[in-house]
Length: 261
Image (cartoon, rainbow, N blue to C red; front, side, top):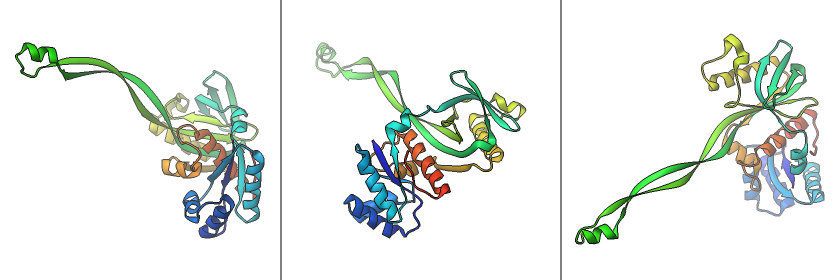
């Protein structure tokens, strides 16, 4: 799937909406809804890469910067590195991954820090006891309505939320810090009493140690995530694509050009 997203436009929103509506063959109102709140915003997705490139080129030439994201390509690239432990050294960030690998990242190579709220469905089995009408007991009692206890098991589905930070550095795939999965003992005496406080401290320290890195937390809010993903992608299954789109748009904007990925 080849995703077309727009970002960083300088024109009035109404003019941008009219251009998008004309290019996609939709109502201006619908186009306006897709870009509400600014970009990046996914407009459409195509199986044919030529269709996606043609739409992006048409919009970009009209003054609405657009990029193309190949979703399969993104997911086949270097897999994100999930962190278990970290140590904030003076010149570099030392990491231990979930698979036990150890590596170091020079703070000077970090160019993006993106934060989001992630969600995952979990299923548990619960035992439920309830009373149901019993015809047999009712007949034995001479017609007085009777009930009996019935126990059954049911699967309960719940949605769990976590906060995640994706670090982007030159020459590497994304490095992922998940609030609930991290061991914070690398802070030493500075370690806080809760995961929430430690995660906030990690975010602040990374911004301090890599001041050149862009920082964006718009994906913390579900409404912003849904606006970015548009009508064709889902927040629950496509958060990785949201990161890819946002990072690509921010990097393209900083270099002053559109691009594909």
